[in-house]
Image (cartoon, rainbow, N blue to C red; front, side, top):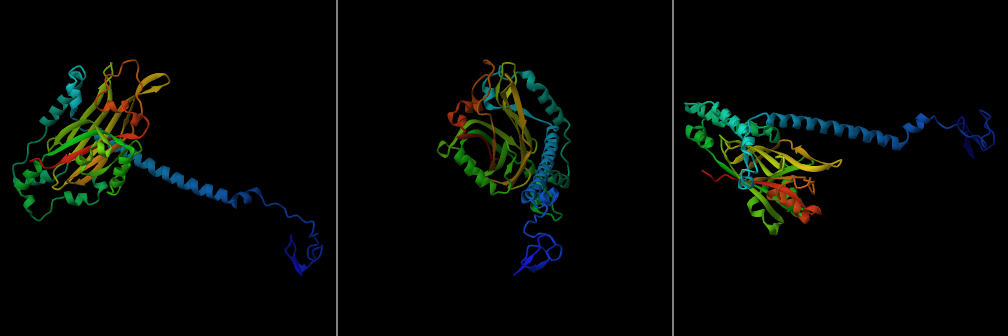
Length: 359
């Protein structure tokens, strides 16, 4: 029977001493390998290194995406804004929204409209002007074919005539914006359907995606309660609109949601645009009540007719109150009185239903 020496590896018949190096093979204990060798061959260390590299790559990519979205949001805010009050705020009377608050913005919008160049006189110029889409932040990035779709063909078509250009310029799209409370089960189902469109976006506090047949789904039987409704009409001259829904504090600060929608109505059979939201609600911080504001990135969409958009946003389950500062509740503020919302079995969700049947 042959055995190997534990020190030099020499093979010999079974004996106490190695015939090559003379070591006592029965009592010899090999020296432990250096600590760095033990660490390098440890599978736990190798797995930790791999996971650290993967996590670092993910964080780097996500940070780059957030920086890009933040720059787009800043670019969007720098454009002209047209501010209107919601149906609920208008009904609450002049005390709710002082006239001097909105007057400077309305004057700025009027000045911007006065500086808009006159429409071209020739048919070819009118065609080119109408085919140019409303400036949007990365609508081409959402759908690589959109740039080709929006570019007019060199071959004359019926739609490239002066009549077709005028029809696209005068196209009106009515939008009804529903601010709702949706059961968790119904919201999960609609989000799952929307994810199949390839345009569902998830920014944590804000999630958005296209949904079909919105008006038919907003019923209590489907787990949806409408808290407030706002109507807006979009055309080539009113492609960008912004408004606020909510209430005021006693010191005239907005508590609620500001909605901004940019819509391109010039493309037959499709709607392209983007949505941006700003939410502002009071929170308790170190014993003081302060307004926490959170703005969404620009959420782009490119949808066919008969489709609308769904936007779910995370709201605080209850709002902090400093005495009786907060007026209300009414409109969207009613959700904070809902037991289902407080126990997290329902969520606040915004639905935008586009009607393209207007002349």
